[in-house]
Image 1 (tube, rainbow, N blue to C red):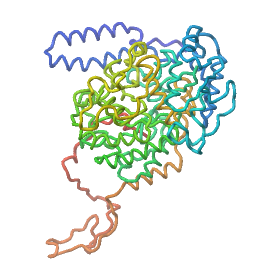
Image 2 (cartoon, rainbow, N blue to C red; image 1 turned 45 degrees about the vertical axis):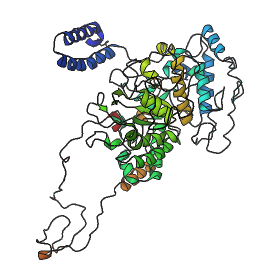
Image 3 (tube, helix red, strand yellow; image 1 turned 180 degrees about the vertical axis):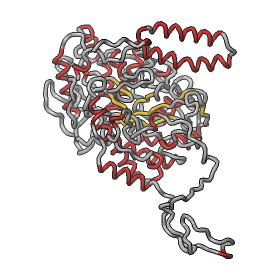
Image 4 (cartoon, rainbow, N blue to C red; image 1 turned 30 degrees about the horizontal axis):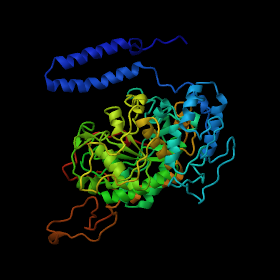
Length: 592
């Protein structure tokens, strides 16, 4: 067919940029201050959209897909994937490519860890003999992984599967990052794939590139806690439409919560995803919040804590990383990027933190920081929230990811506790800038001195830190450690940006068992309705009025079951919010 002309915005990007520069200059110079601020707020997203659409679609680095084999990798055991990927990577060996570092880089990496032999894939901590295809020893106890803390159903020792092994997820992650280049470590802290607010087909809601040279798979993140989010028409019916998390909360049943989490996670795996962007656990504060149905805790933090722990355990039992969100005080969608939630220490710890703390205590892989401000500072950038409370007092050892475009700075935000910028196309986390900055040795930050209300100082375990690449090294280490600890890297069925399209668009993940479980949970959530006749109804003078015939009332004055409603019956809704529409629903509130 004849070649199609490029659209105007691709042929003339300079015109777009010039137009926005002129509009921005006019907005700054001409109107009064109040109008000026609003104009800039409107123009900024437009300029970002034009810039993104003028760029070509993102492509993985040269040789990346080839290093991963560019075909579906086998399911069911991380050792098979990792050793297979390593052999593929070593087989390419075309100097300076994705598969093989150049001589200068190799010398740099060898000097970083003298015990690691990159030529033979062996080291002093090796859990697998050099060049061997043999599977590592099974875990000492069936269904458990030493040093990981979460069950692994396939029985494979996750840590021993790496050719350089280690005694904990933290030590394996640190050693891997020590032997990465700055560019490779930078892949782990920033997502790829999006073009402005457009997600091209074949990419997950967030995709994080792996490092095939070191057998580190990619991370595939998808919404949300109440089912695999389907984005394109052909995906309709491929995933179970689970009840919303608020309905799960209404069951008051931790056993169902764990089964729910495991069922959703199994469908994520079937669709090629290994990170589940949930559960959402914020305690309700604003009745009209557009995401209340997504929040498991309802209005009760103690109930939310119990169900959150069970849900996270269920997700991670399927070797899928759970992401508890939105930390913290994410109470409304209106002005969600600029609203400021103000709360004192006691209120935070007694009302709003318990569900998050419960997730941390059972080993949740990641925490997502929220859009809103907390006590004047954006949550994704608050040292008091992320370093002092989350890492210090709760003892969180996974990684902190941002909500989508919730980052408002670069190295300063990373130093405040954000490890991963998502979806990443705003480019805030520059690897070279992050690597040049030293990590905060106190773990708290200068502006986050703990008050006496809740303990003193750093009460959690020693923070997970990198030993190389400065601030970047610590961030990448925490991402890898959280993914390892949750089991997210134990199997990989595709590689984002290469060959995930068939799984994402064609695989049917739902099952009769899952649909039956979804119905069971929905039924268990109905706790206030009873469709039975309560007995005779008072009539005449005893009732002060005569009985009326209608729904639920028989002609003789006896009540009948309320459902089904007779044709033409009316239902009365009482309360001030009856005619108020919810204000906005977030991305994670969409599924099925």
